[in-house]
Length: 100
Image 1 (cartoon, rainbow, N blue to C red):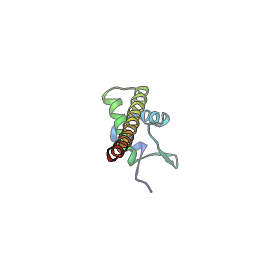
Image 2 (tube, rainbow, N blue to C red; image 1 turned 90 degrees about the horizontal axis):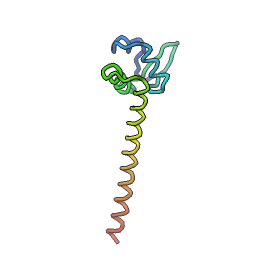
Image 3 (tube, rainbow, N blue to C red; image 1 turned 60 degrees about the vertical axis):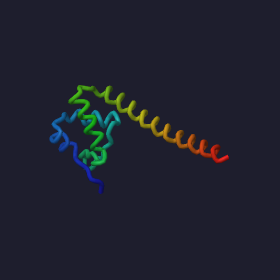
Image 4 (cartoon, rainbow, N blue to C red; image 1 turned 90 degrees about the vertical axis):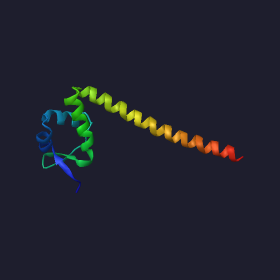
């Protein structure tokens, strides 16, 4: 079984509103498991949860803002990966012509 923590424990530990947790789930920003009507966050998703919690409570960013920032950062990561792939292809092509 995966390591996980319940929603109720997270609310106590991070001193957040339970509605904020539910809004993160409803918006698709975090994924949960439900067992016997208890909602759990997997430990592997804890860094994302902490990031959203910090942005919301420390920087006063609302849920739509969190969604926009998350999507923008995801697109930036996708572009970085695509850039690495293209640079690798360019390097291979360059090496091929240097050998000729």
